[in-house]
Image 1: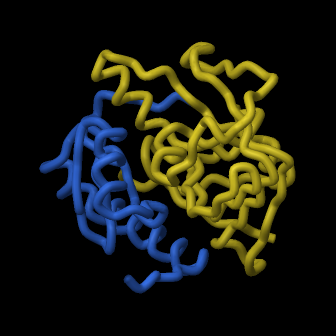
Image 2: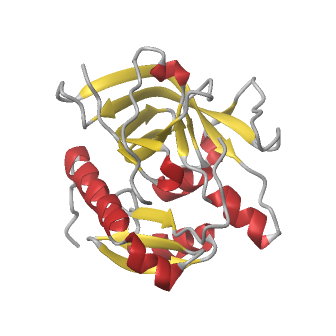
Length: 83
Length: 142
């Protein structure tokens, strides 16, 4: 099997694009995935789950390296962040 | 020197960075929420899990964490940290820290509480922010 070497810069670019895709498609995602975590890779949703750990565990098995994935929560409007 | 970010979840300000650590050794892109109320920069459970870091590879922090959510989470240390800001007017602008905090919340059984904790973003704290002047712009919708 051929190993793929990804530079930090390429990984950052892919992560940033996935996060931007999540932000730009938020209205559609809200209709379909409200109160769930979605995983975005190559600028599309590849999986979702209400439990982020279950989602990450499943993704790890399938993809291995998740560092360029956007794994974000789709807000249902019930939570307010006070940090 | 100017670093640009975005407004996103909750109307908070966020910055995109590449974080590199020596112990445990890793390098990964991360989005931090800019938090002038956080004494230290910290990575939350979801980012730790996404990157694939193990808490067992980290040493315990001698300091207890306390915040608006109480004092429940454990704090561990990621050492030898470099944070590279990509959206800056100086290419590859970096900041280094002896350590940042890896936050480990208890595994709550109540689904709602669990889901809320899992939403918390990693935080860029005043250990970095004190070097900069922060300017806030118009909020985005998400």
